[in-house]
Length: 139
Image 1 (cartoon, rainbow, N blue to C red):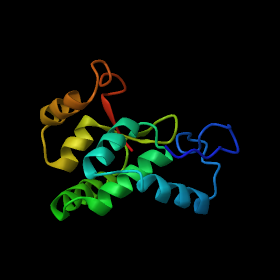
Image 2: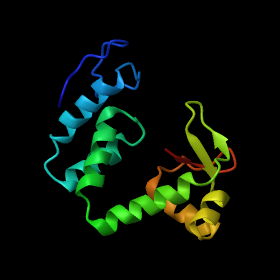
Image 3: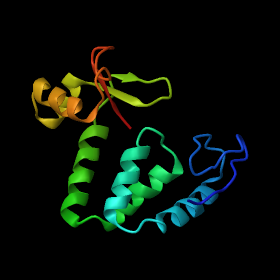
Image 4: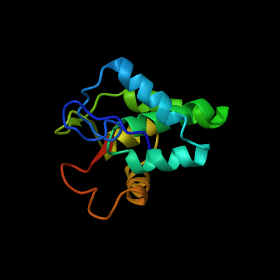
């Protein structure tokens, strides 16, 4: 994996979330990281592993996916983004992330709350869903 020292924390800037690098430096690193992916499956795996981190590795993986995914998958992803980001968040998390109630997600996706709950439970660990009116995190 690429290593570039973060000027703020001294860790690998590829994995840190300090956001201390200039936009130009971030773009250079993202381009270099993207070149490390051998195929779509690897990029999807990295995006899944890094989805909570919001680091440059995650961004590089998502860019690789958007550039290399079949048109049908790319359109499906864009449709989900347009749906999710076209609605107002119910809450904001401690780091500013947009948080939506299951009811809001259900209305936006044309699903029942039970269907959304089942989908969320399939992706989340037990105990991640309850609390704060059952908010799901969309980043």
